[in-house]
Length: 291
Image (cartoon, rainbow, N blue to C red; front, side, top):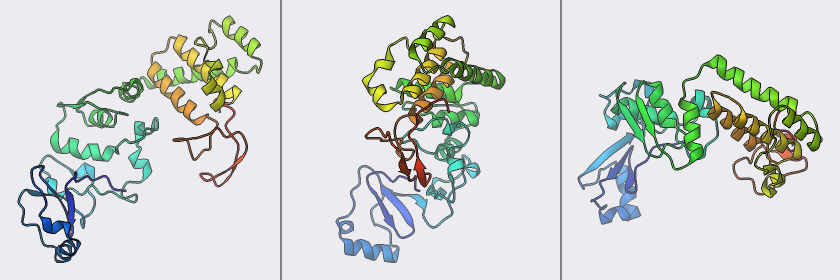
């Protein structure tokens, strides 16, 4: 795993990585494979000026907690490998709350926050995505402001950075789940609708149960449970609705009729048992979301 970047003009020489400034072009000799091979072998540096060291490849990867404002940039080695940062560290605390494609790991953010910011200062992330920068800033006592064009990303960031009363949060989550359990016990849609109305919850207020897409990708019971949960949260008086909606999103992602190993880009629904490459056994399609 590598998370370092050298820009469009980066080149490797010997044991170091260099990049040119935007106004510089590489000497024509560097386009010659023989010349490049010779220079790498001799570890010679290019004669052009304005080259800067990005990191030392032959040094140990940087430990984020050791970085200070005085740490020279040229000493940073951000080429972390799996053994340097196993998954449980890359997805620590709320970073694992919801899958998000393309996010960078929190340790990368931590390095630059420690280098360029102090507690009490403010960092702004204009494309905050899943909120990695905002979370790490909060963790370090740095104020953070984030913007994103995606409404879901903003909701996810709020859920990750809100201050929680943990007892109240747990109570609300369990309350919503218990209501789902009670109100989806009937397999008869007519009885279910009557039950919901009797308990002041109108089932499927937007008529999503008739959606062709949802009927294609979700088993009937799973869809019923997801829509019931959504309406309970929507109409309920909950303090932490953002978090409850994130739980709904993650549940909806996992409850689709797809294989366990292809949750990111499923192509067609799976309705029969299949060999699961993730669990290395035969698995069944997901028929219920509540489990």
